[in-house]
Image (cartoon, rainbow, N blue to C red; front, top):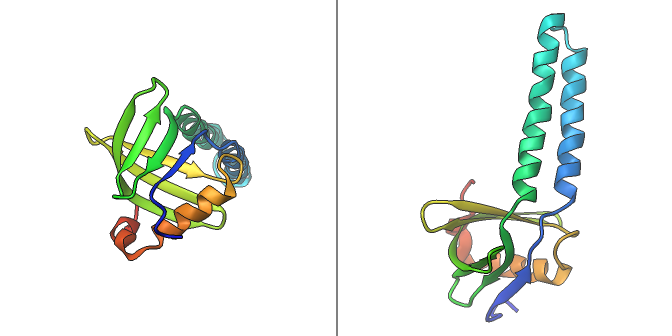
Length: 145
């Protein structure tokens, strides 16, 4: 099954990530408010996790990628919202449970991070990606992101 000629899939941002970030920012907010920090310092510190979670959630929600494809020769193609196809290369990946994180680099030094989760991709697509990513040719792409 690892010799599949190409893998292509529609992409939409995951709805789970913003919810997870909101939960984590609420825990950070609670920790700051319960900490033994002077009263005047608690409120400026409390704003920081909220702003960080909002920034991260908006960044993933506004992903310009609408579809992705991985050809047999290990080149990636991303279809963006404008309908253009952009060439990309795999920088790194992580497979954790049912989730797959892909970091792809575009021309010009930009990078795109795709989160493939159960709510935005098919289980078969994630399984096929996992099998191809497990090939030894992609070990150099598994460097820390």
